[in-house]
Amino acid sequence: MKYKRQREEMVKRQIVARGITDEKVITAMRSVPRHLFVSEALTDQAYGDFPLPIGEQQTISQPYIVAEMTQALQLSKKDRVLEIGTGSGYQAAIIAQIGYRVYTIERIHSLLLKARSLFDRLLYHNIITRYSDGTTGWADESPFDAIIITAGAPSIPETLVSQLAVGGRMVIPVGDQHSQELIKLHREKDGIHKTNLGGCRFVKLIGEQGWRE
Image (tube, rainbow, N blue to C red; front, side, top):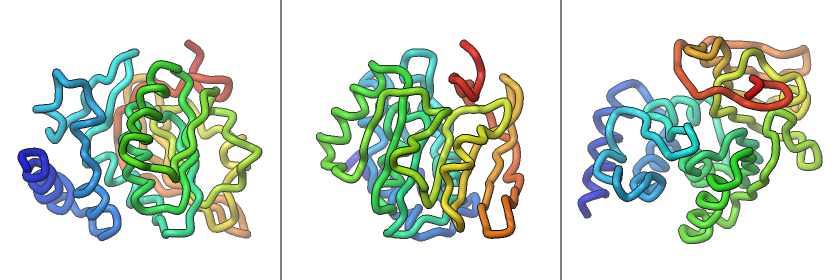
């Protein structure tokens, strides 16, 4: 009950108050137990208005950023979604509450093992995981209705754009190693349309089409 109250407060003050209006996203943020996606030492801070470390120099994003990126994907129940950067697994869990299937890739094996164990524990059978370089995507399962990149890229990886279906949406932080702009791409028959959603700050997207380690 304690964490349920904290989730309700998080949604009210951090999500709805800041303009998130997609009821599917709001319901998902109310439902997913964020405190299980952080270490035991940080559970009392899990619903705070800030990112938290999850080990391996990675973070779980601020709740509002998770909600904003999810809303920008404009998800429906039939959507197949590719996530680059599983991390704690929280973002994938939020998407799994809304979409049909989530394909999530993580390059750090220890984080992927933890996330997969938690997905199984919480019965997220529609989340499929892969240990790989996410910047090259998941060609065998493409095209995707939506793609979300949860780390900052120096530029938009063309391989990922090519794996986006016509009508598909992508959300990706693009910029330098210290700050980025959150970019939404919408692939239509006449080409790629981009929208800048504003400033953000993520860890680096490491990989063949991202930053070098």
